[in-house]
Length: 246
Image (cartoon, rainbow, N blue to C red; front, side):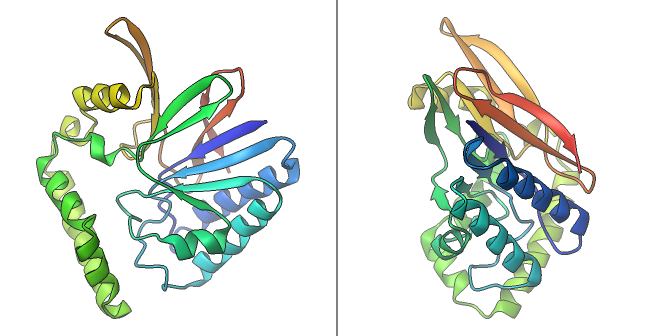
């Protein structure tokens, strides 16, 4: 059976083609059945913005319904927080029939293991972002934010998005990519030779040697209105990164 990994869909109502591409993927997995697919991992930035599990719109309701159907068919669904949807909570996961995974979860498929991350914590050269990330992930900050009226949360998210876009335009590309030393640190601490992540929007498979060990880092790409990226991984075979059209 196959395991699928996707990331950085940045779903929102103003990009319906992208959402339809996602629903098409779910339909294909469901039709193939649990005998062909064991699990679907969504490794962060599933939504462009997530303002709390009490937020509802037509798209989010359809997503919950579609993922619950997939889960009910026997295919496991897993979420990991990204920098856009770090407020996704247990309520949303439950309504999707999914399970939330911690950043840095290690999974085993056959005799192989892999470290799963969204990837933003690996971009340590972006000092400004790392400071903001620390604040936003603080449980006290999250609790305070989620206690605010939805209108205030929407306004904050719009302002933060504009600030982020302006800041990114001023940064060198290498600053917003992962730091190799941090990659090796997290892989060594996890005891793995393979890392799968998203966030950087730089799909690729990187191979290198570290302390005599062959290592692999597979980076998922972001989705557009025409294309998506996925990794397909079956027991006793290597994970395969691919781009597909809707």
